[in-house]
Length: 536
Image (cartoon, rainbow, N blue to C red):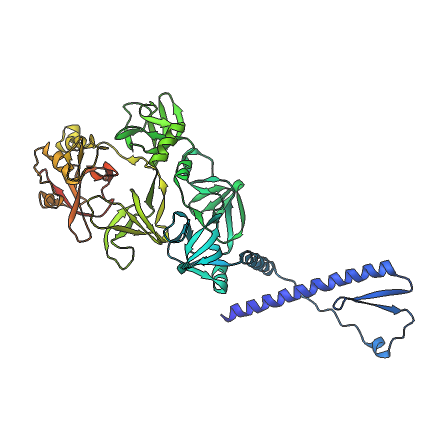
C-alpha cells in the first residue's frame, strides 16, 4: 500500500511540474511577440490575473533593490518517463468516459439485468450484464428509466449503483473496447474470412473487451471480428439488444430450412448412399455454404455436410425466411458441460437435475438472473436455471441439426434385435405428443411411446413410467446398449419420464406437446435409472 501511495504522490508532483513547465512557455512566447511588435520608446505589460495594462517609461527610475535583486533561477524539471506519460493519458481518457455520463448507473448483479419496454412486467428488449453502465433519465418507483447501448427502457433500481459510488465502482471497467459500427458483424473462430468458420454475430453499438489483435482482426472473448467495422476506444460496457426473431434469422446469410415432417438426413458426401452424419429436424435451419448438382453443402449446429436440394425437402430464400419467422422461439442455450436445474429461482433451492449443452431448451419465463425452461410435459416441477456467469445464453433461435449415425453393431449389424428396435422407434420421430396417448402415429406420451415400441418386440410394459422403471435389469451408463430404457425423475426423486437409448449417446422420446417425438442427448437431464428390458 505504501508503494502505491508513493507512486501516486510522485505522479501528482509530475502533473504539477508538467503544468508549471508549459505555462511559463506560453507567457514567454507572448512577451517576445509584444517586444517585437511594440519596440520603440515604451512597451506594455499585461497583468493576466487582473486584466490591467500599465505603461512603463524608459526613463523611469529603478530602485537599487530592484536593480540588484537577481532573477530566480529556473527550476530544473525532471523529464516524465514514457510510463508516466502513458498513465496520465490513460487516466485522462478514463475520466473523460466517466464524465460523459450525466447520471451514471452501474449494474452490479449476478448474470445480467433485463431491460424492459415498460416498468414491471413489460416486454424485455435488452439486457445489461454485470459491471455495465447506463444513463439514468428518471426514477419511477422501484424502476429506472435508462438509455444504454442505443436502447431506451426500464430496469429495476435494486441492482443499480448511483452517484459517486457508481463512478468509483465503474472506474476499473473503463478499458479499451471494440464498439461495433455495422448492423451485424460475424464472429469467426479464426482471423480469416470463411463461410464455415462463423460462430456467432455481434450487433451495432455493442461493446466488447479486446483480448488481442492480428492484422485486420480484433480478438474478443468468443472469437475474431473484422477491425474494419469497429471503433476501438476507452468505454464502459453497455446494454445489448435482445435477440428478437428477426435477429435470429439475420444470423444466416444463406438460410435453408428443412421442410420434412420428421428428419432430413445430412450426409458425409453429396450422394444418396453417403454416410449419414446428422439429421435436421422439421423446420430446422442451416447455412448453405455451397450449391452442387442436386445437393447443398450446409452448416447447421455443429454439423457440416450435404443435404438434398430437392424443393420438396428444403426451403430457401424468402420462403425459408417466412418459415423461420413462424418457427423461431426463445431458447436457453447452455454454454457449459452441465448446468444445475432448481425448482425455484434461487440458489437456496435444491438441485434436482442437470442439463446438457448439447440440447436447446425452450424458455417459459424470464426473471432477473434466472429463466424457467421446459424439460418435459410430464414434469410437475418448474425448472429454473441461473443466467449468471455466462453459463447460458437466452435468445430467439431456430432448431438446428443434431449429430446422428445409424445404429451399427459390428457382430450382427442390421440383423440384431436391438438395431431393429431402434430403427423401428426412429420412424416415428416428428409425430405428435399427446398426454395419455398410445398411438405411435396419432399421438403418444413418453411411456405410451416406449410401451408400444417394446410391444412390437415381445416386451409387455405398463402405461406408466414409474412402473416401467421397476422392470427389467438395472445397468449403468457404461453398460447401456441401444434399446435400453432411460428414466428421469422429478425433484422428489419420483420417475416421471422415459426414453429409448438409440446409441451414440442419444435417446428417442416423446418429449412434449411442443417437440413431439424427438432425438436428444441421453443426458439432456440427469437420468434416474437405466433398465435392460430385452433380457439379453
